[in-house]
Length: 109
Image 1 (cartoon, rainbow, N blue to C red):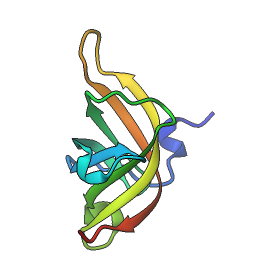
Image 2: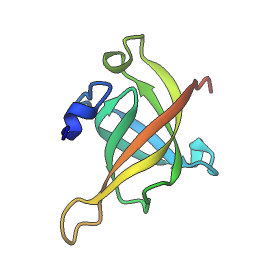
Image 3: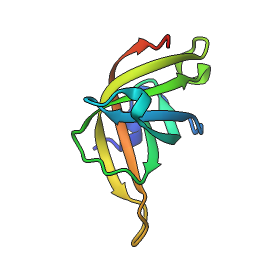
């Protein structure tokens, strides 16, 4: 059986990248601020106090680092879904959240 690391198609980078995320039906300018724990071109892992659940469709606005994309850093809106939610520790309000990206588009605003 393959481990989680063996199944990844793209490398993860331990970068603290600030971004905004929101449910699909919310404008990104009204989203919630967060900072990545790790990131790849296919997803992001982060902590939040916002209530989310596995399967929630979300949008993520961030400056995608060149280390991840192999291109110049650029502002991008990703569309994806929450794929993982775990309590950080007993009695702590933060959640650790994984979002899987499905597609992206440049953000020019």
